[in-house]
Length: 204
Ligand code: TYD
Image (cartoon, rainbow, N blue to C red; front, side, top):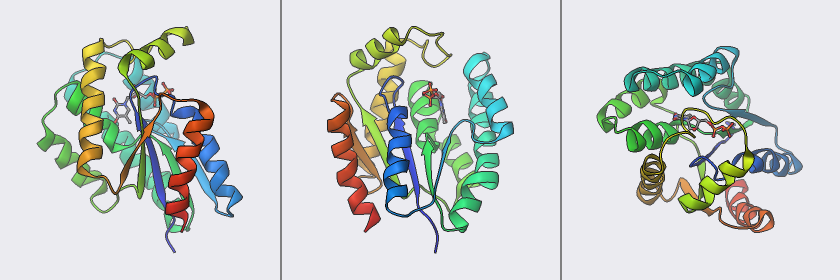
């Protein structure tokens, strides 16, 4: 039996990463074998590409191609083998991020994104995507208090992040079965409750 593929998405500062490991533990407690991974990254090559993508200025199409190159490697080395072994994969970001950031945020044509998505993972979509949504000001406040060096995406202006958020919500609206919106402007406990309700439905 094939495992399930769960992805986490949201604008920078939405707080999704702190819930990735927690969700994996919840699934393990139900007896499932779970791999936790992330994009861009998840493989030795992918992590090198991540370093470049987060820090090096480049053309928008180069950025998009590198995101999908890292993804191809990640799928081949990690995600597909795990799913074929019947394991579950919990991944911090996937192709919805490319649609939201490179498409919504930077304005790359949708047709090019569709072409790459078709090439790289025509037959694979996440079984479930958890979209952490919250107002931009709250997300930016969270990034500001983190007081660390900001990457290329985090340094973008507010209107960029507003477009990213809008693109994510549009995708969630178009694919409500797969993409579930989490109200991330909430306490940790409240967010865990929201996640628990959703896990129950996918574990059935
Ligand atoms: P993120 O997942 O937020 O990691 P951290 O929590 O360590 O900051 O950072 C990855 C960044 O990469 C994020 O700003 C979104 C961006 N990104 C894209 O622009 N396109 C993509 O396809 C992916 C996967 C990520």
